Amino acid sequence: MSKRFSKLILASMITALVAFPSIALARTNRTNQDATAYCDAGQGSSEETLEIGSCAVHFQNGNHLDPVIPYGTFIYIDNVSSGQGENMDFILTTGGEVKVWRVDDTGNGYGLSTYWLDFWLGNEEDCVTFGPGKVTYHY
Image (cartoon, rainbow, N blue to C red; front, top):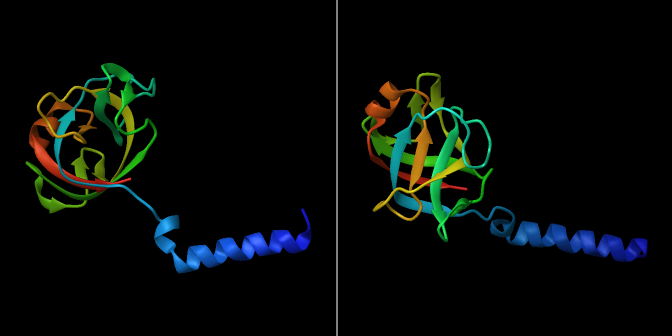
């Protein structure tokens, strides 16, 4: 490939990103989804050790290894309302406020919204305080 052609491709890419920034910043938003919390120790279905910042999502196709949001995806909390409070952009854990979560596990939140999140909080007291709630997030 010639240098001139390479420069033309690069210039086209830069122009596209400047003219259409939403292409570079594309994200998926989920609104008003059910939110729960759990504290079972061990590994998630991704085989990652569960820790503060881990969360579970529904599995699909009857396969607990097939999450509706891929393993390793980072979830950014926009708004959560639960027993901890209303309209917050974080979840309070014993370790502090957590705004970013990672999909490490799956579950079957029977009867809950399609993109329900189950936050791993590490201890039963935090889970009870969180209770059921609603969450809006993006990834």
